[in-house]
Length: 130
Image 1 (cartoon, one colour):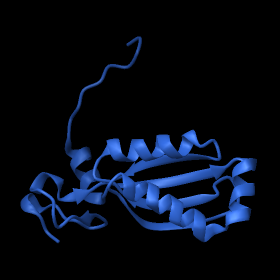
Image 2 (cartoon, helix red, strand yellow):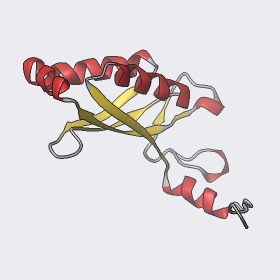
Image 3 (cartoon, helix red, strand yellow):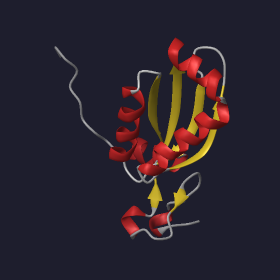
């Protein structure tokens, strides 16, 4: 979908009920690592139950889960979520991390067009001590 000014919605959820400024929901990379107690709970409940619980948490903040995968290694859960704003994403992160069963990070994702726009800006900065 092409928006005003040539921006696209590639990789974005377009909300039908949104105002123009709210049209595109930001995407976040979800990464989580279970604590030993969290792994015990995961083993007792299974992945489908945890997917449902995580999806419910995201949806309670107005977001959606695009995809969610379980893995093994340093990261136990990986997913892509859409939230209407950063406050919703932060609220879910706080809620899930407060459980103590899993440590979750949500990283904002940007499109190639957003990176192009950022690269075209000319901010100024002075390094410490310079």
